[in-house]
Length: 305
Image 1 (cartoon, rainbow, N blue to C red):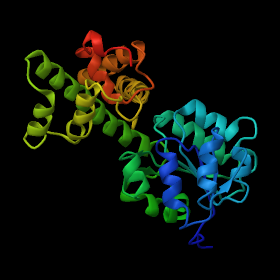
Image 2 (image 1 turned 60 degrees about the vertical axis):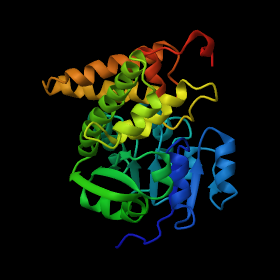
Image 3 (image 1 turned 180 degrees about the horizontal axis):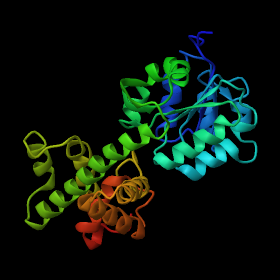
């Protein structure tokens, strides 16, 4: 039987990425939503989505579940905890795992779901909240054909670039780890560059505006650089678009699987330590651009935000 062209879709997790993804899907598909924060659910309900009081309630009629939580502990809770989704998902339903959790965690989750007849699409996403809301994400996928076919109407709404890496859950996570290695090192390099510019008495705003257009530029330098500059202003702290502690998690995944593969990743390991220093300094819940202050602290009169 062919998959439904408008599958009933549940979105579990309405954080920085889950909320705009749910908005992108809502209106195009019948959508149910769950998050531990009632105000986020209410915001989507006001736009036509069905508000659910638990993961189990959210997926009761679902053909496809978009799981957009922070880490493997939240994946476990949403699927297998009290009132978890796995209790009520019907055989043949598909869980799209959009979180970055690492290959082994994705494989373990897929095996547990398979015992209940539920399919898994390993589909970690990249691109940030704005692109999530516009259906402009990069999504890398590891999934068997049937699972991918069922999930395709949802994935096509969310992604402008969808790359099928391999046929197994875990394959998408492996590719996402390579992505996060690059992203994490690029942010750390941007922080070093701005710290050096400040140390040399250069205006960091001018440095970012100039160098982002040249050979030394990168997406992360152009995107995070202005927020790093804003960190030193007297106004409000930069908007939290990507929490620093996400890169503590992700770079830990990168260095862990690299060690298992016996591949040296010295730059990734150094970047991981920088994010850990930032977390230890109390920056875990702030935007990851704030890591620049680990290398170049704010002046005493500007501290204490």
